[in-house]
Amino acid sequence: MSAEITRKTRLVSAKGGTLEIVDPMGEIVAEIAVPPGNVSAVPYLDLVPDGCALFVADGLAALNPRHRIGIQPHPHARETGANPDYVPTSATRLEREMRLTLARMQTATKRVEARERALSSIERVPQAPAEVPPVEELPVEVIEDGEGQGVE
Image (cartoon, rainbow, N blue to C red; front, side, top):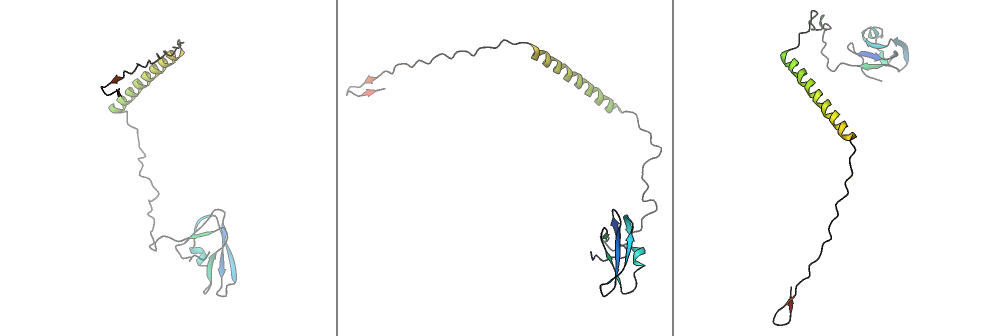
């Protein structure tokens, strides 16, 4: 990988890896072991002789920052804003009303489910389908007009 390694580059690996110092002719001068984790590239850049370049080898990734502006972390950056003297408040009136309503709904649901179970356990007499009466067709009346033609 030929990513440019600068003083702001972070070297990242899960199991550790190696950096190669390569001279201008392309010959590997030295290999440097890098420990696992997220490591700054600054100490390794100080080991590179003039005219040589530093390249990432197996098991290592070089991550450059998204921008070139360096940001110094604030000394209190890792502290949380949590209140160390936190005491939970008592339940409010609305919370108690909500819990009461929820309890009423649950008892009503249980009552309905019990009634459903009781009704499903009752044996019902099957009802025979009602007979459909046959449809009788009425005779069609034919009326003859004076010329001998039939009209319905």
